[in-house]
Image (cartoon, rainbow, N blue to C red):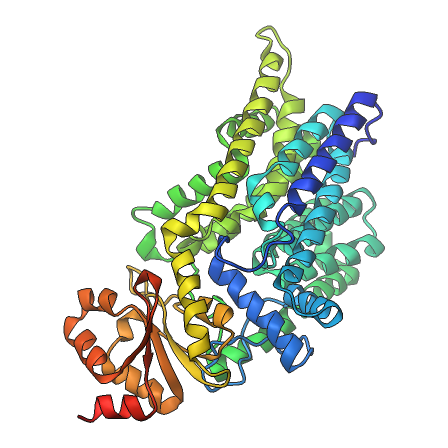
Length: 511
């Protein structure tokens, strides 16, 4: 590891970057949970979980969603520390949805400072400055810093875990290996993509100890310390899926690679697109290439780290390259920024004076990131007007007064399978989050009067859906539904609120 930077302008530059990065991460902390969001479904689920902790009990082992049907709402999820911390703040200060952004923001800022420290330890001072600039200005990290989801916590644990691994490499003792393993387990608890850090730890141990790895009891102790907590949690959480059928995209989504998607390997194009847009930018790939071409031994673990993340992307190929899964690629950012910084430091002057291109490449990365931050701001503030999310929220606010607080709703969800026929998560949590009501989801393929009647018998009192949308796919069933159930309210985006139960509904179904 390198000593901390001593050059005055480097110190001032690092301080400026940390200040700018912190301010960027604070920008949207006070924003309520409205339509100005990306990954809306992810954040809506966490809003519900936090709200239900506050109202129904603070036992962190029982996360609950609102699209629960007649179940208690327990849901399979990663360890729900972020919504639980949000609920704690709501217990202290009263329920305000912007409080749910505080914990992700705090972890994001802590990660920024931790990364800056790590970069100064790992890289020559100019490379450390460049790596910190890339990390501080990364547009995906800017977005995730106030997103009500677990990535900020995961990244904090991952960067801390890498620092622990490097410490163990320098001083290979059990007192350093145990913390590294525990932090890796904690990162996996935060979110499963952090399993790549566990792979990296295993690689580092094997590289350092070779066959002695399998003869040392301390290695097994450390492995158990890191593996048992996430295994225990995910086994416990999986029981909610088995008993109640509720999952946040873990058991109800098809993630893993299969032979049917290998030819053509379009998932590679999707992954490379997100790596280019959110992680490296085009000039950054050239800095990565420089780090590889002029690879120095001290940078091997950084490259291995990035490689382990790609193992996860390939194993989860059904989703990692999808249009909605761009935020998965935050897992690449710490390793990528270190490697780009290493590329800045590794390019030799030589007879061709390649070193002169380093400032231009760094400027290209930074300008690209600034442009993408602008894109994120636009997407947050104006994108919902195009995607229909704004109309959905207006409809939810319009429908909420029509539905009693204890009456259950049935909400149109998404498609239940992908183009290959594999099951995908179809639950749409937005109306539940914005209306603050509980109830059921149905998939697009399930739409029929028979389906609505089934859910009516289960206790649903209102259906929220787009009748004209379904008319395009199944006009006969759309007509049956429209005739059977009275329209209570019509909202923007084609959404309607239909009464499934009650005198008027019964009269409509029995002419």
